[in-house]
Structure formats: C-alpha cells, structure tokens
Length: 189
Image (cartoon, rainbow, N blue to C red; front, side):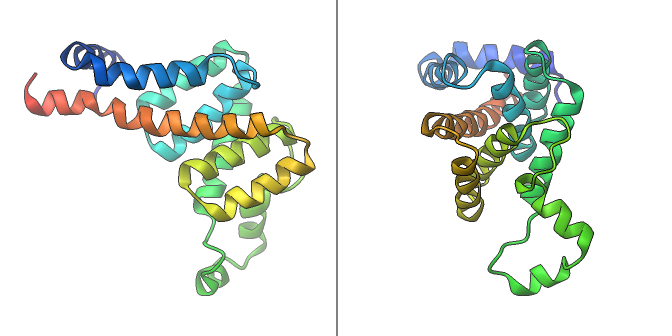
C-alpha cells in the first residue's frame, strides 16, 4: 500500500498528465468543502464517517487530520465511525430471513443506535447528518428515508440535507480519484 506522501506525489503527477479532467474533480471537491451551511468541524466528522464506506485509507487519514484541525475529538470521530459501521451492517429490511438471524438485543441496539436518542460524544443533529451522508454513499433508499424523517424531527434544514449528499458524493469521487496513483504505478509511470 502506498504511503500518504506517495499518493499525494502520484496524484500530483496525474494532474500534470491530464490536467483538464482532474481539474473537473478538484473544482467539484473544492466547492463542496468551501462554504455551505455546515461548519467545518461537522463536515469533517461526516467525512470521516463516509470514508469508512469508501474504504479509502488515504481519505481516512486526510479527513481525520482535517477534523482534528477543525476541533473534533477522537471520541467524536470514533463515534462517527461506529455509526457508519452500524448503518453498513444493517440487514436489508425486506430480507425477513436475514433479519431473523440478527434478532438479539445487542444486534437491535447496534442497528438502531444511529437513530435512537443515545448520544455519547455527538449530538443528535450530527448523528442524523452522518446517517444521511452514509445512506447517500451507500445509496440506501431505506436509510435515506429513515434519516430524512429524523432530519424533520431535529429541524435540520433542506440545505443541510443537500450538503450531506454533496459530501458523500465528493468522498465517493475522491476515493475513486485516489486510486489514480495505482494506475500510474501499474502503468509504470
């Protein structure tokens, strides 16, 4: 696996090899991370949670450092990752047999944690925004509907909801872009 610095170097090379398509991605990503209705700390906590969907170690590293700079605690980031794990592991609601396999109190508590009132280090609004972003990244209609209901209950604005979708999209794109360094390595550049 390439180190953080090797990935950065190779992405710089990619920019030089094909600047116009790479710039399209950068313009999109820069727009997502600048401004908006969410503060930088919340954006980065959401980003760390979504990187656990994209499985991009470079992105985990980058956004964890950005979250720390924005004032996020390690406890908040761990809780965000657990929320991500809970949503990713949730059995599909239309799969009765699979749901029965998880019919235990501990499974139920784990799978419902993102929408219940338990807030350890993150507030309910941030948990809901994380849930929405994870749901968008997973393209889970079930969870999107569930977290949109929670957003209404928690008075989350439509702009904040849209922003979580853009964060998920930027991270999905970023995870794919990150692997350009592997293309260059495989190509022999």
